[in-house]
Amino acid sequence: MRFRLPGRRDDVPAGGGAPAAPRVPAGSSAAAGPRTAAHAGSGPPPGADAGPAPTLTGEGGAGDPRAADHDATVAPAAGWRRGERAVAAARVLAIGSAQLLLIAAALVVVGWILGKLWVILLPIVLGLLFATVLWPPTRFLRRHGWPPALAAALVLLLFLGLIAGLIAVIAPQVASQVTDLADQFTGGLEQVQQWLQGPPFNVDEEQIGQVVDQAIDSVQANASNIAGYAATGASAVGSGLINLVLALLLAFFFIKDGPRWVPWLAAQTGPKAAPHVAALSQKTWSTLSEFIKQQALVGFVDAFFIGLGLWILDVPLVIPLAVLTFFGAFIPIIGAFVAGAFAVLIALVDEGFTVALIVFGIVLLVQQIEGNVLQPIIQGRGFNLHAAVVILAVTAGSSLFGIIGAFLGVPVAALTAVIYRYTRDVFDGRHPEVAGDGRHTQVTGDDDGAVLTRVPGTPG
Image (cartoon, rainbow, N blue to C red; front, side):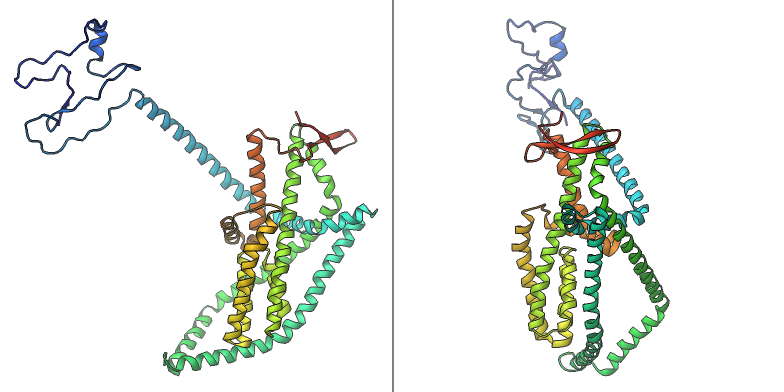
């Protein structure tokens, strides 16, 4: 189908004959000359007034007496810069895609390196987390004249004594009540079997026996795999104990020599980078400490009220379940769910369905108060991560590194958010290295050593 614009040389009048000559305004300098002929079929030159939009004529167009096979579609005419802009857009897209691929490749390489060094990095990270807990009492002793090594050793020994005492309290209760719970669990299975044999299920004893036999056969067929899993679990426990010992040793050195770390690191950089190194180190340490404090407070509140409810309802293993709830708070959302599920399960086995339902209501109520009242108040004083970010961080950490990854997922996400916000403020021309009192940190010293001093003003 062809379209013709009015005024073109190939327009044919209705009565036939020669093509009509284009209309040229009288007195126009473009009435004659090659420039007029050059632009006659290609539209106005750039910047010229195009005038009213022409009506389309031709087969199927306006005023055509012939019948057309289809209706004409009016599309906007191409602009003068469309091709150039398309090429520029394609160039920008290609450059952005190449940059994105390079960044993705760099992240893959960094992740691979971190995975290879995870055996070394894990004790360091755990040691830093222990140091955030042990540093306040160590700092208190040092401010009262205690030597750094003695203060760090005393605090670490008290911490180990607290953990050992907690285990000494929990272990006898678990050992004394786990046998009764096992017997009650067996009785509960018999009750479930009798319930299934009655209406409305009416499952006979032979069918139940077949299901039990299939389960036993499945276990026997996978005995080698189960043994392999047990060996892997034992190896993981041994590796965890080694990492725990290394983390405690590193925590001792962190709280003994920690104040020297930032001056040493800042001294390795130039005068311009030193304030940023010091400020970012302080922000990350504060964020990590704030996270531990927040989750410890949340865990204590959860453990206290859930343990109180279990004690009132006479559910066994109150202290172990309360301790599990406390430590579960350090894995936000997921940990609370798992700890609550254990409490409901034990209540179901020991006390029955009604008490289990009451325990479920207590756990749900405590979690709602924590999530909607306590967490916003506490997090208002420190960092704030959206619940979706927390869930994704826990999920990614658990899928990559198991339980320890779920535990470290949220602190890593919080530190990543701190570094991103600091970098964003630097790019925006702000000065995040300047504290609220208008002072910043700089490195001073000589060949004998370097120290950090806080001076007023913005660093140059």
